[in-house]
Length: 255
Image (cartoon, rainbow, N blue to C red; front, side):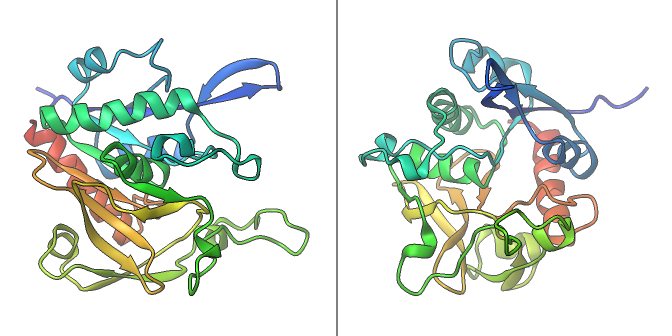
């Protein structure tokens, strides 16, 4: 008998198709990472609470992946004013994702947050974000590499290439997972964690002090988040493959 693959709900993100039609999307890299590195079946769900009921969703899947996205988490979620310079925002995704973080943890449903998803995990527990980490004193530019004309670099090996080290907390979940004290990762974000939330345990920090890896304290199940784009080349990149394989193992163990 063929073993049933666990099912992972992969959050979408709202956008306007042809600037007219509301739609949901997720990059294929996220779906492939779940399928190839976690050995699970990825199913995208709408990032809109009036479409997706969080409880019904968690009844139907074995785990949740909160992906990266173009839109920033709306600053009203952590007590700051909106700023047109930091748009776009996706308030529907904010509403659903923040509720899902707590629901996953309460139920022990495996949860993996990547980039925006990592930031959502922090905000769900009362943490704050900074819209442009590179503007803080002593910080690196964590944004994606661009050409001189401002366009994103066309070579994905450059775009998603390793950019900086992450020092892992000795004895922490990530240090145990990787068996080393430092890893090297890509970097394609502007927004980042400023103040960790009440249940957020910092597990990894970049050389400039930017928080890169977290877990949720006292979560009964897998509840890890990373700032880097771990979905990139997850079937071959050893850092990303190890993270998704651990997520897959948690899916098969169940809550």
